[in-house]
Image (cartoon, rainbow, N blue to C red; front, side, top):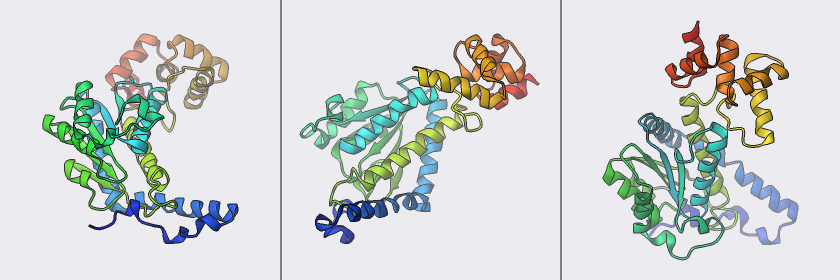
Length: 299
């Protein structure tokens, strides 16, 4: 059986244990610099585009994006899902991360959880998966039974499916409609896939969720206009987003922020469209939440 790249020894680091601190850090940094190049490869970018477009279609149909994984991969899925809520102002249900072993597995190893194919299916059943949803299976090794079981269950319902792994000919690739195999090479510490494999997974998840949200009108220019102002920092950011989008001063942005019910997107349309709250909300609804389209409607 051919050795998986994620388990292979890296010839550049076979003597890392006797390197100086500076040499170790430089070596890790050099290895990390190879990661973004892998994503630019058409072999990765082509299925990535298809996955994003399919995720957007799921959202437009009222469906959800569900990440499912174990260990580091599962934790990265949970992290990306959690960060979509404050960044894009979406419901926690819209993007979800499932990890083998449940919440406890975020901090503690749950023995045997990733080896249960039924566990993956059961966790998707528990959130009432539908055909409108999209399930992205995450497994650096590409062979996690928990992920395979989840993908098979999703396909049985007609849900969209994608697989993200870091090995060629990964087992999970055969269980999904779209497959990304982002092969970043052997790790600095053999088998420690929280390193380069984890980095490429994090970058790809950033790209998938962010691009999908942009395609849904959650970004205007490059401003996160649907940010949920849940703390002092984000309240200040929301007001400065209004300033940046419209060119008004801070006091004016603050006034419209309050008038818009703390929704930066609505405040921007009120200012640039020169309309009241009701008309701004109506235009945004007609424009499916896209500010640029809403402003055209108001002209």
